[in-house]
Image (cartoon, rainbow, N blue to C red; front, side, top):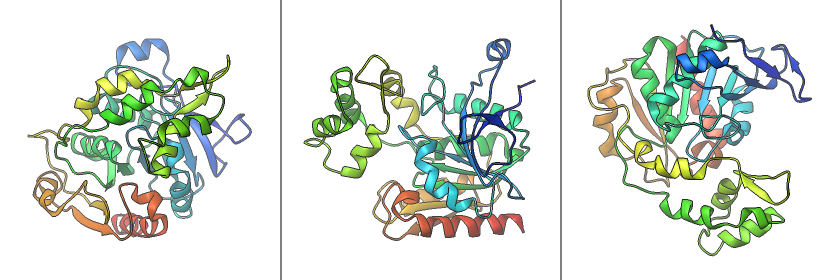
Length: 300
């Protein structure tokens, strides 16, 4: 059996589920880690007292649960919301393999530890592919699916430039984040994207900075993360599935609809005006309104 999840409140102490905002950690004892692929995941929670099916949010590559704080708090006015740090991201463990089946095993362990029979599942980009695979393989654990700016298809390789730039940063010698930003700005012009990448930096006890994520492991795993997911032949899921794309993003097009509906026959593809790839950040209010309507429809 999995150990019950601990809930850490804003003061860092362990406690019950009464806080509206808390961090949870699912702990596996060593023999359980040997017996199964699942690892300990760090989770943030908002709206713990809300009734109804909870919402589980999965971030994208180089993201974390922290990126979902604003949208999570907004959704928590009607639902209990949990945002997980996927393996090799945020505060969760660094471990091979970095692929979607391993992520699904972690998430099943999380659901078991938190005693959640089923959840509304929201996944962005890489998290969207993990969400789709979990939904197809374990349909009884998902009440509704929301996939944000990603399709099931395979994508061409990308992120090589960004990983190369991050690896070249002399993080141990940096005195401030502004120095890191100055190093990146000639190659990465988008201020918001620079801030997103540098959110993976943390201060080192011995001075300077260090990466919160295992850059080399993630970079070598990129082929796993850009393949089609769910893979060909996976069972279809007939439940309520919403695919939200950003108006200014090129990740999902009308040509993706046939493959979406191969796996999710009831899937709806909708566009959020004024949003790029990070729909929940670029147009948070529109995103939250549409997702909440989707959740409420699934609960009728």
